[in-house]
Length: 394
Ligand code: PLP
Image 1: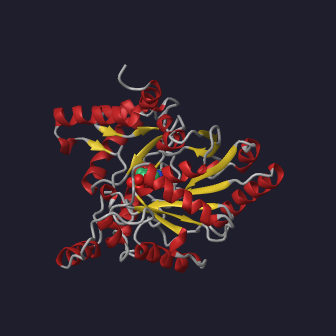
Image 2: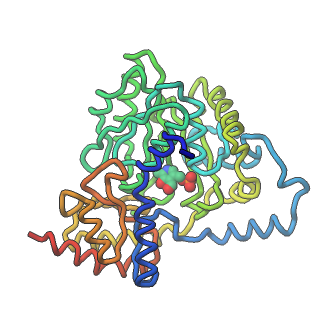
Image 3: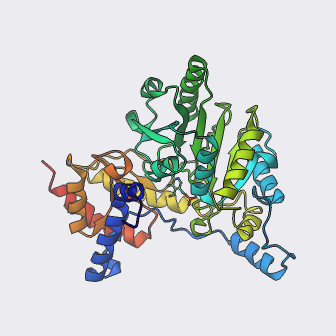
């Protein structure tokens, strides 16, 4: 057997998205790509703002000597300083360049966080539904991902959390606005969550980190403001990227920020820098660091995502789907009209609409729809959603 048993098992467990991709490719071949409505993939459809191209041009026209060489593993000091300035402005907390490590996206950020924090058999708790890569990211570094259900409205079930935190818990991992629900955790929710963690830290005599995965934090709708997690818990580490807010998913650029109010933050940052190096990331891409240093307050056209959300949410609820209205990101997570969401997914697929079953995201009975697609694809999917739910009307 060429591939390690463990890798094989993980590939099997995460095979939903691949299976849908393969079925989608077959459908496209048969019916033509314009007649297949693939809402299964979370690939940012909006292109970067003009400032991105201006920066690339400026750098290409006036290259600094050595600008593509190795650099400190944490990233360019000026990029870290720029991220810190923006964070200070947004949070009202004083961040310094030393509190920031530039990474290869949020995925790279989470991997260096877990490598830095986890001892063998340490547990990371997450609320279902969740981004399925978390299981592998934690497992990569010898930890175990423990899943507990969300409460009503996909908010954290704090009672379940209180029950589940143990002397093995190293971190609680949250994602808001979430993939796959688009639900935002407001200040009261964060306060309650942090309260439970702090009480358990006291009881167990153990430090527990709140790790916040925030690649969608700037994709917020209806004028909502982002409640940053730092002021709720001392041991807070944020992982984020510019994959979605600047539309740079393929460029692999993001960062980790450690709460400057945490007394051992310098030690954590040292661990992150070491991990960036030895995991083979070495450093975040040089050119992208130069570019995003000047784009910290820029975003893609967020109202365009909101219009897509409004369209799809309006249509699905009109048709009778039960959906929690997303407040951000570019997913929604409707309840399957029949108990077995695989059966419903198949009904949609017969009508050339592709979605992801909830069981692939830790929550059967639901399915994930990505509206990060063209308006034509979104409109084109509606007849399929209409016909599929018709079968379950009574
Ligand atoms: N976290 C969540 C919740 C995601 O949805 C994704 C990507 O889809 C990532 C992390 C990884 O993002 P990045 O491209 O920044 O590595």
